[in-house]
Length: 263
Image 1 (cartoon, rainbow, N blue to C red):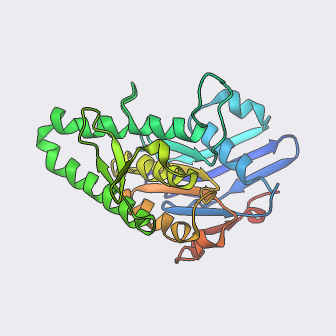
Image 2: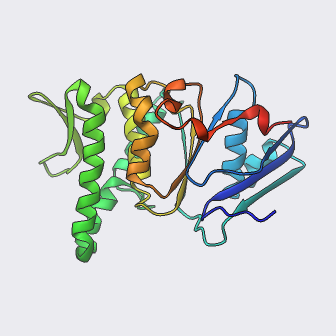
């Protein structure tokens, strides 16, 4: 069978997972895929195994003890820095010396300067490093801010760049300026999703997301996929959810029942 994946994951198969479960996903949509099924049916297992296989994480693959793993990835797809997995969490870290949640740590990673360069700070600095792209970069940032402001509008918050020397993202609510740390768990989760996809810079990419609706208001769930696609229409989205609201705005044809790809 010839697979046409348009630069994305087109097929995935794993046999003997934990010695008892087989997955066979013959056609993975190049745009949006929504995995649904009851608790314990293997949604998270499948996402974890797919992500590990695509990113060559042998240690994680071995932890699932499969007898076979096979997938199709377009030969022209560049994996480095183009595959991301966002899990839903907001629990304290194990290190008692730190008071940041895992969610806040992940969010700070995509906001501030880091060695990998995958952050909003690094993206903005490209205006200085690549002045010939300054207009395009600013246009993309304006789109990101527009999406964030639309989704935060009900709480009266709007995003802006702080005017102090830090140039950090802050949120204005009336006369108050709020830091990212002041946001709710749902707002942090939403911001993490939006900024991660934004930083893919509209290039071919893959986003895995496990129950992204956790902590998100229903109105946000309803427009989440649309807004992720606005930020990067070239991102293949593979997510698992229990929320009908994620599907409600015209994405019903992208639903994949776990029972149809599991033996």
